[in-house]
Image 1: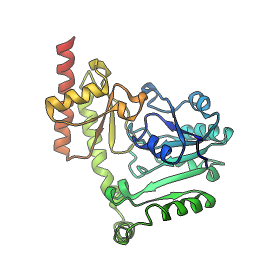
Image 2: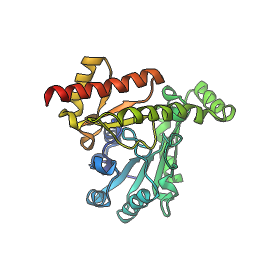
Image 3: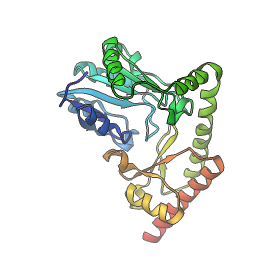
Length: 282
């Protein structure tokens, strides 16, 4: 897929460990900027501009941290750039069972992409097995052969009891994916109702995944400043958008991973905090 010193593209915003993951493989990470007004969908012009001399493109849909889900037209545009520039696409699809609007489509299913795509899957999100580190890669045979050699010489394989747990989840719990996903959908609905009434915070359309991306630029703070002040004032922890790249500056990521009542309280507290801050500084 790539050699030492080659360039690997990453869509910004990105999961925080992507750049170091590429560096550990000897690649030079290069970010493809997006804008909040386009719901962080990469444009063809930005992709094309950065694709020259790159070897790989890492995408993530449903996306962490934004909740963006690439539809068929988005994936077609990405695949067109990949084919024209001879890029391998690494597609992180670990949230594929958590779709709130539309449906999940893998870029591997787009015409002529099967032999230039590596799909990353995991039981971490779909089956609530985050700490088990149990996942897979779907890719052309020659790529899997190299990955098998790498795995054999790094982690030596997945412990047997984790494999047993994964097998049980896949074969004995047919409704678990829906059961795991449902609370996140429910909390998304809670957040939408609350934030709709909050004039200083805008929620980007969350189409999938367990996170919300909130635009807090109206407060006059960036994401880091807002997150620190919120923690000090309310003991509520969120992630600043700047943790995920320059494109999400002025935003915060909220995880929908606590109980409904605590999530509702935290969301209302965030809105109240934002309103109080803007009132006191305007």
